[in-house]
Image (spheres, one colour):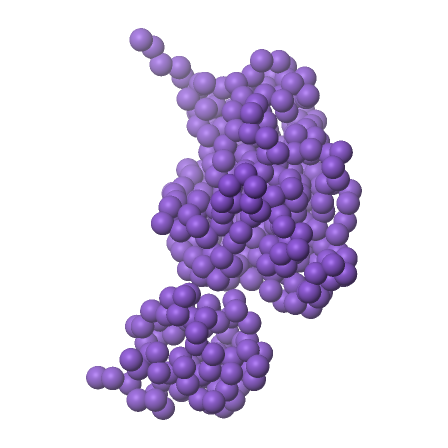
Length: 318
Length: 79
């Protein structure tokens, strides 16, 4: 038996992001539930979020983000041979999202699978994509994080409906002579599986806010540091820190403890809400579009969420 | 050696000041975190984590929700 030899390294060729058109402000929510703009902004840092209408599916928004990343990469659909979709909020679990997204984008017969690591899903999928390119099992990979959380949220539950939102983000990963995607640090804490949960198919998303906040503000900065160490990068060298956009106070706490003094800290949550597996590529694609980060700089990505699961890696900004 | 109430109060005052900006002098035993000091549930978690580092006493989330006043936290740490 032989083994394949892949590329010496893998890198992200392009990012892309997409948000549905429907804006829901804090004042909109305050009309139907007992909450207000000040409460939401001080607790979670969100000003507004986007919600897809009934005509726009989780697959539709994934296709939008994937199409943007593919166009920005300069590759044609025929050059993609693996599609990985990270999601935990599909309306129906069968068939998977990846094959449908690939078909809609005109990508012919690629390997296609979904990853469910909730809000950490994009970093898991990106690690799998980079490893596949280096192992020779794929040449170019489309990675998409897509979530339609609005269909799993109880819109009368003020503890969750103010936080979660819809969106998609994507990356195209291809071969490279030098490392462009650093070693992943990933793990889980299944003893806290009840902390973020949809109990059954008739239930809505439930979150133990204090448990998640305590875990996120105490357990994750060591993961962030280890991802830097494994890549041989000092946190002070980072051009950007893009954690999952869970809660502005969590983002700021991890950033403070990480010591990424020169890094632009992603705060996309303010206008996007928490979009789970979509949040990291969505945030970074917008930072690139706005010119906040330069090509060639290093960004630390850090996903964390239900499971509980987490994963982080350093990437070179395309 | 067990800490005195005054020592714990002083430590809590410093922690609460660092996390919320509330002057340590306002952190007195009878004060309610929510009603008097306007400290929200997430800041309470940060205070509990910092108190664990300072005093070596873990305050789990299921206990934290029962600690309504500064005095409740002092008693929890002492006992």
